[in-house]
Image 1 (tube, rainbow, N blue to C red):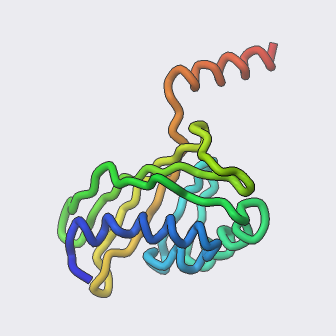
Image 2 (spheres, rainbow, N blue to C red; image 1 turned 120 degrees about the vertical axis):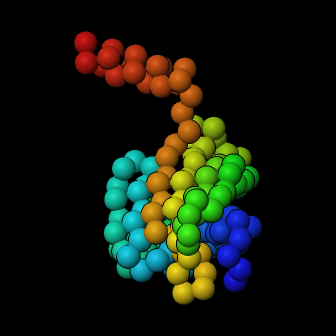
Image 3 (cartoon, rainbow, N blue to C red; image 1 turned 30 degrees about the vertical axis):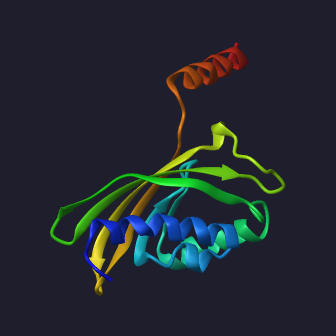
Length: 147
């Protein structure tokens, strides 16, 4: 593999393809052994074994048949010797559905490091994309529920 922005940008596409196959080991194949993964709702996973077990359990149950689509790298850059950052966005299609729902749109920030002659993800933060208007609606609903 080459030490280029294109090489590190291709990680997200491989992850999306593996997700669609329900293959956690392939989904996380570009991660360092001691990597960390923060799921969209805040779960923090540490180490490749924990990440694979967590995701395979979901792929085998509640996320079986789900897909990540319309993936695109917003930006990617090498930020220092052997370090890079990739910002990726995609849409989620739930099992049994045909089209994505915008409330499930996600973005990921990957910190990658050149290890063993290839880019490896050392940290990934996954977040839902929420507009300010939507966040204000959610805040109002929560306030009303407390009243």
